[in-house]
Image (cartoon, rainbow, N blue to C red; front, side, top):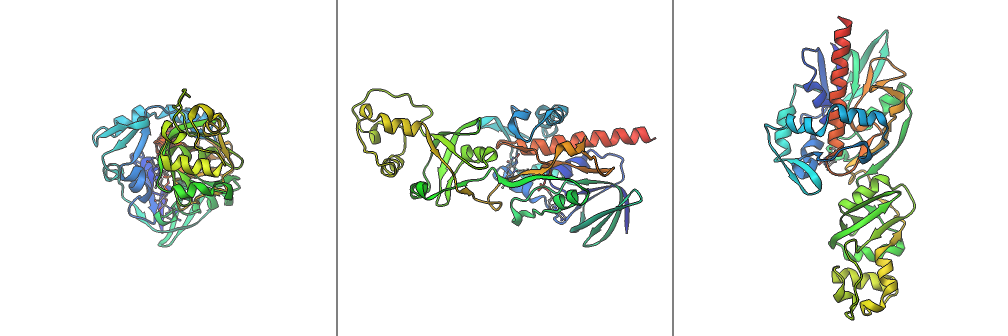
Length: 366
Ligand SMILES: Cc1cc2nc3c(=O)[nH]c(=O)nc-3n(C[C@H](O)[C@H](O)[C@H](O)COP(=O)(O)OP(=O)(O)OC[C@H]3O[C@@H](n4cnc5c(N)ncnc54)[C@H](O)[C@@H]3O)c2cc1C
């Protein structure tokens, strides 16, 4: 049996970052995997760890506490933290490392490799049952992440622990994921591989970026972002976000800055003809404001994140309001960010915020 002050459950982005700042503390970091697999594949192996512009507006399920946490440990501080491994700023103000292996090396910690099976509490001590024996801890931090990408080790362990201690979970859904189609939009499937810039709007959010048609539906960064805010109902696409109608006798397929393949399928699907631009008002209006109701999404196997999770309002500075000394950080929380480094920034900010809180409470106890 292992006895410790703090058991950090999960050594992904948030668990590793917390451990990094648990200086002079007695803690154990538990994970079934030696390598933080999601961190490794993140940003296509280059780990898009933050963005130039970060605010709570980039997150679903946000409140003033989310802003407080993001302001407590900002993108600037994170950039300073990663300064020695180097990074580059690319399109959409995203910051990427040169390799996620550099990030992992920088964060790496000693781990206890085991499956976390159950957590119980009696007489102020948590009993964590693992595949390699029992850990007794005065504090537990749940950093076991979300449900997406099971093949990278995702489990529902964190949600199960939360429920066991009386927490309600905001409904869980795949997010930052492609959208599947209803029959009326199957014409898009014939465009598999076609990619261009469009403006995608859902609820009161709009994203101007690439969309990519695939054999399953429609994806690409603008769609992935829209999927965060979409639950059901219409998504609107402006296929011509940078185009201002001009007077031309050229046929639509020659006049518009869109792939020909797309125009042909679009016109066919909407029973329109490839007429001169200046007599194609209806087609132009439809291209500027195409509404459709997706059938669903590509599922957890393709989703970068899980939206929903442990409710912030049931926590006080990440500590459970129902069970003293039980904490949650990272993706297991309901707060979910847009594409562009927002999710890792949230993991790091929440971890750093908690590290400061725990070290303050240690000082107070002395
Ligand atoms: C393909 C992909 C690309 C992404 N790219 C980016 C990006 O570029 N930028 C960005 O901001 N976000 C990105 N994300 C999202 C980001 O990686 C996650 O939001 C982030 O890793 C979540 O961190 P976490 O620490 O909360 O959980 P995780 O990183 O998922 O870590 C949880 C850990 O808990 C362990 N664990 C879970 N259950 C158990 C158990 N029962 N027993 C033992 N161990 C357990 C897991 O092994 C894992 O190591 C990407 C996600 C994916 C899937």
